[in-house]
Structures are given as C-alpha cells and as structure tokens.
Image (cartoon, rainbow, N blue to C red; front, side, top):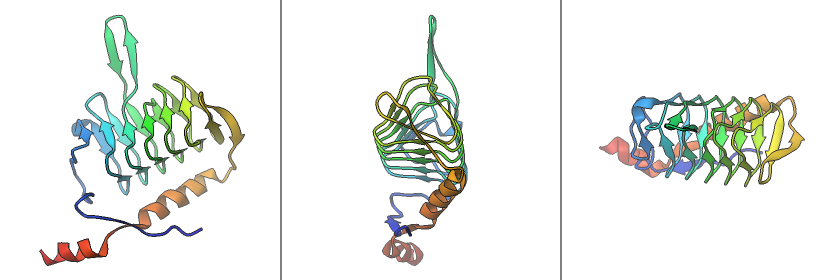
Length: 185
C-alpha cells in the first residue's frame, strides 16, 4: 500500500540543521539525528537528562518523550534516554523508557513506563500500558494494560520498519502554496 502525501505548513515545521522550537525543553541536552520528523504539540524533556533520537524516526502529534527516573532516599535521579533509528512513535503516546532500540513501532495512546527497555525490532500495540522496568524482547508484540506478550514478529521486521519510516519521510511535504510564498520573499 502506497502512502499518500501528507502536507505541512512551513510555519509549523522547521527544516534545518539546528533548531530550537518551543515544545523542546533543554535543547542543549537533545540530539536529533537526520531525517527525523517531530510533529506538532510534542514535548521532549531534555531539561531532565540527555535525550538522543536516531535517524529516520517519526514522533507523532502530542507525543511526550521524557527521560526515565529513579527515586532514592535523598531525591530523584534522571537517566539518559536513547531512541534508535527507524522508530515510529504514535499519537498521544508517552515514552519514559531507558532505551528504545532500532526498528521499533509504538502505537497510539501508549504509555511506556519508566526505565523500560524496548529491544530492536519490537512493536507496542495501540492503547498499551507497559509497567515500569519491562523488557520487550526482539521480534515481539506487546499489548494490553498491563502490556504483555501477544505475538511474534517476522524476521523481516527490520526491512518493514525501514520502509515505513523512509516512506513516511518521503511523503511528508510542505504545502505547495507555502513553498511558493517562501520563494517569493
């Protein structure tokens, strides 16, 4: 199935090497690698700890990405969050994981509990709530509340996620009218 082109307004998205949009807190602690799409109303909490997002990732609307924390008797410590390459994070999802591997699909309305580890080539179904410190093995699908193993993924999951994220990026285009307005300035 071929994806339809999704058009965006240049006023809502910035396409550049370095950028600092308002919903990103602590931009000095955030590394976003090339060809990653972060949609509107997302929150990335780099003010708490380092956040690194890989290449060809898609962070959908209203998603929240924040580093994991651990409570100690003398306070709270935040730990870095690393998100791998070719990761899709669905709308309204909250990611509080320690690590999200490469080629991972997180569905809509998911809550990834603190210090969870999502290994490479796994998927989280829509409306799933993963309890804290859950480890999701490679080539598995977790779903439900609390999230549990439901099925296995094929060995071609890596290729499928590369196709999904790269195709999404190729079909994410500026509206034709906003491009012409930009050229006329």
